[in-house]
Image (cartoon, rainbow, N blue to C red; front, side, top):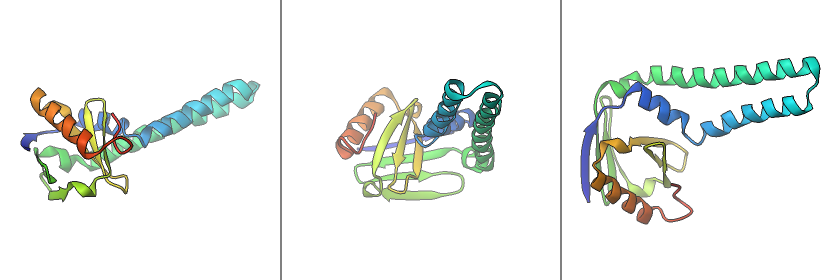
Length: 155
């Protein structure tokens, strides 16, 4: 297998991909849990500060995501080129080039039209599935399933 493609991420895609990272979902879950706890166990005026704190928590998380994306603008201003082979994953952006052996990745997850190539330290490379043809997506899905068997791969 040797698949190479060049694409450009949009800010909207980066925002969407960042929001669906599994690390973000628990943050939003904690806020919802806080709201539900306040609604069930709070009384009168105690609920208002709890709800306000939860809403501010969501706003802070969203602000952090958007600020991070703004700081990462140089990553999406230039096209990305990825090269996927049996032995490695290569990525060239406007500011860097790397080629990493698949053994450096712990798992590959799929969510909301993206593949997340995850390293053991929880770092993830975001790879939009739209940049591949249908045949390439099928080939990559089969490759990821074989390379990262059950327990190491979600989605």
